[in-house]
Amino acid sequence: MHNHHHHHGHDHSHEPFDSPGDFTLRESVLYDRDFSQRAFTVGVGGPVGTGKTALVRVLCEALRDRFSLGVVTNDIFTREDAEFLLRHKALEADRIIGV
Image (cartoon, rainbow, N blue to C red; front, side, top):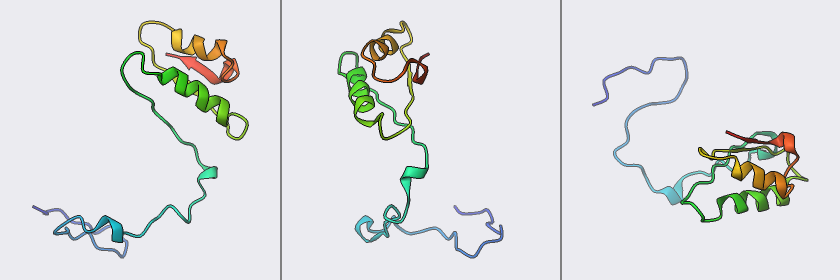
């Protein structure tokens, strides 16, 4: 049920749709944006031993000369992931933090 108002000063409709529509017919909003002017957060997750930290290392090595990077590792028991990245010089030490 759609029982709340949308009178907030702009000129487009908030009427409910009967369906989500056809994805292939939607207008792409990605082509006219300059993504080099904004920050991104990339999360890497998965089971133990699947190569998450190795992937982060390779990404850092591939992107560090073109972008300003930082890594926050989330190893709840040890600092092993952060230490691995530091040991392999994936980034400068002040760009890696283990929490």
